[in-house]
Amino acid sequence: MESIISIKALSKRYQGGFEALRHIDLEIRRGEILALLGPNGAGKTTLISIVCGIVNATEGEVTVDGHDIVRDYRAARSLIGLVPQELTTDAFETVHSAVSFSRGLFGKPANPAHIEKVLRSLSLWEKRNNRIMTLSGGMKRRLLIAKALSHEPRVLFLDEPTAGVDVELRRDMWQLVRGLQADGVTVILTTHYIEEAEEMADRIGVINRGEIILVEEKTKLMQKLGKKQLTIQLQAPIETVPASLAGLGLDRSPDGETLTYTYDAAHEQPGIGDLLNKLNNAGIGFKDVHTTQSSLEDIFVSLVKDTR
Amino acid sequence: MNIHAIRAIYRFEMHRAWRTLTQSIISPVISTSLYFVVFGAAIGARIPEIDGVSYGSFIVPGLIMLSLLTQSISNASFGIYFPRFTGTIYEVLSAPISYLEVVISYVGAAATKSLILGVIILATAGMFVPLRIEHPLWMVLFLILTSITFSLLGFIIGIWADGFEKLQLVPMLIVTPLTFLGGSFYSINMLPPFWQKVTLLNPVVYLVSGFRWSFYGIADVSPALSLAMTLFFLAVCVAIVGWIFRTGYRLKA
Image (cartoon, rainbow over the protein chains, first blue to last red):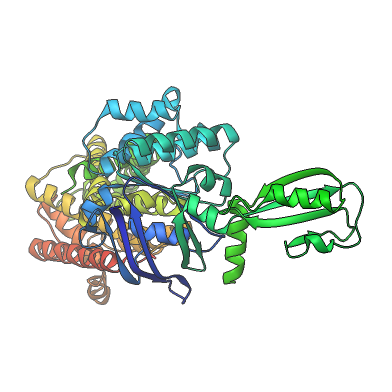
């Protein structure tokens, strides 16, 4: 698939020597939703800030739809909308004038109809004449999104869009992002909430200590690294796993009350029926069985731990 | 040229001034009026004419310069410092806008406000003392050049400052003393010869002298030198702003 943002050998060393990014290579595909996951201080915000022109790169280059972000910054930046992590807004301006200001700043002629559409889609239209300082935190977050969408960007960066946002608003935001994707907008979001990435993303990039550890289709990632576990609760504790069941990789819990069987989610048919039959034949009765699939969260934690 | 962006920032800044009308227009006008009441009417009546101009009228150009300098600096420095302080500067940095356009819009707005203020103070002065303006075109030129130059200086201070204290430091500790000692309230010919020489190191002398010449045709230094020095300060500020943006100093990590 064609990429809209191309990041090559990007490094950032801050004054004082801190290396925030090390040799990042990343192709972002046109129209996708890419989630960047990583612990605090991993370099997510630095990466976004460089692409948007807020931070200078030390080395490497970035193009947005073929436009170099330094040489051809006007063309590159006018394609991008940025929703920053912090709730940085003016206080005294009204919602409507702040959003109109952003549109002008990005070189677009005034378009009240578009501003109205954006404000309505974020449930801010009723608040358009209110001063920003009177808004709640959630509304300020929506205002920042409205500002970023005011100039009809083709690429939207959402830096932790749902931090400190209630469940309902989070769902609204996901809805909005899907709507944007339907219009062909490429969305890059950083998040700590794995469920968000799991819910939203087409692809997932994991970044840790300034390096991209992996970028993968979400479904493939889940398959590749996801593990399933079958937990069997026994009617009576057993002392040892019977010989007829050895070699299947069953784990007996210390108290002997449960057996767990771990298998790869990618191979859905490891013969669970067979296993249960063998248990019956060995005369082991069970009360209950349940399976769990490792979430993206588990995958993420194990990935980040590995690179520590 | 990103005209829409220049207009957006310019209007935002002008709107800010309008919102803070008391602070940006009314308070300078009141403080200047107080100078007229004290120096023009109360004390001025006991001070002899200077070069055929009554003392009350004599101090008008200097007072306008005093407001112009301090207000240009505080307007422009606050205009750029505040977005840095709150973090809203991210939007300007991420916008498809060149550094030149950023300067034009912020400094243009600050200079406009200073000009408006200068004209208001001039009109206020006219209510207290008789005024005559011999070279109106030169007067306007000095007014515009000074507003732009000191708005640029304010812009530089607003980028250099890393706290509200520093924002006040330069206007309070440097510009106000230089203006008071720069012949705003006296002709430098009234000083002893040694201090006349020393005072020529003060850039404000040239601004006030040239400006006063455009009113009454009297000057401490030649008007051509005043103009040259004003243009020189302008060039210095432009060079510093150019350097700031080339290096991203205090704007981009």
